[in-house]
Length: 202
Image (cartoon, rainbow, N blue to C red):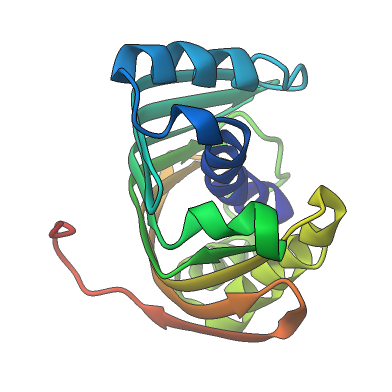
């Protein structure tokens, strides 16, 4: 589902955009960082954003309690934590994420119209959304293929996404994947694995 992957990667891209836009604020007061981040996110007029905590360092971006609303679809994450030499991006044109976490993700698609929710096709789709690795790789590739439009390349490694999707008909689909390797220059060369069960350990 393109919309689901789009929301997940918007969280990643928002954190990256914050780091790149606010490079001069790496080591200043966290409250200043939060105010500046909110100003940057407010420029995204297609969506409404809210973030509770911001911590930006040269090699790490941490956002807590991130909420995003687009029309009738909402997404939130308890924690977005991206690690890597982010300070290099303005010089190399590549955003390198060596490890990352999107924990406590919840995407609410419960109000989206899907037709017959009791039919075999819908039940098959729910299983595909939950378990099918190729399905996820294909959707991630679609997003990565468009990343170059930002003027930067994105290289993701060891980034875990953990949470759930609320689907129509009171169905809950778990999301638990690790993006082992993904590069916007090679959207077909993607490696993902199912994430381990249990709470993410920081």
